Image 1: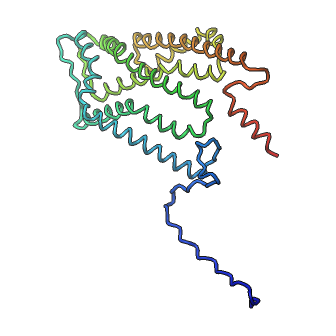
Image 2 (image 1 turned 90 degrees about the vertical axis):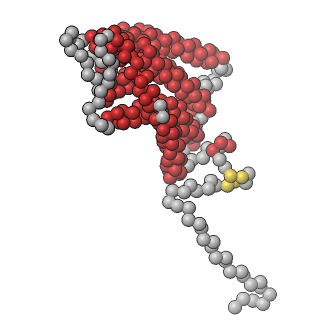
Image 3 (image 1 turned 180 degrees about the vertical axis):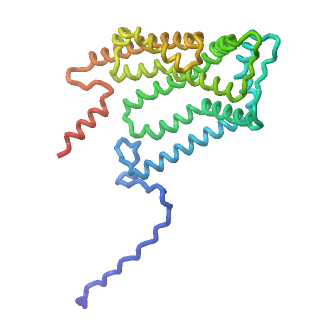
Length: 315
């Protein structure tokens, strides 16, 4: 029994039922005295692994939606796009076989549909690649420091510019002479029978290869910015690089000397361009280090400094 004058204790209220949010529903972020804490308020917030998976799923869904919309949009112009790929073949046929029509044939009833679908998918991927990479950037950027963001953004823009430049270079300067040379290997009393699938595979492969090869300056500049390579080392080993470029050209392009040379020459020019970019990064780094007071940390070391402090705080 409770003593007289003691207030009666109130029973604990029954817990309110929590609405079901689903297995993968995100949890609300923890609140602080100043409001809800978010990663953009300057304070680090480590997300649980499940929330990382939720964010990754969200970005993948957005990227897939962009690719789907781009491919659907390209499908409405699939005949024009494939005709654009066939233009070098028509010019080469008019030069090598002026008495024949530049026809491309197919073996099965579904082959044209499959080729048109692949063409639409390839064009949709090329067109929406910046949006897809932007979704990847939105997933990665919250975990980066400010100096790392400043380093990554120019390289992302340069990646797209050089890739599209390589595709355009191949389409307008390489495909026509390459097809002309390949058709010239045929005997006098023969005529080519080109299938849609094989022609699309040939053109799409060589276009993508040239686009990737033109990323060489971006890759070397990125390594030079991180201090992994130097302009002096690149210039000293340019002969070995030239031999490697010829080998790469022979592996990635059709087996004709013209296409291999056409790929190797731009590679060598891009290599020397990369040396110049690496030299500019070195000069910039030296100028910044000379301007810093003695004992100050060099720029670009924010993550390394924080990691060192975090390791020192551990017992």
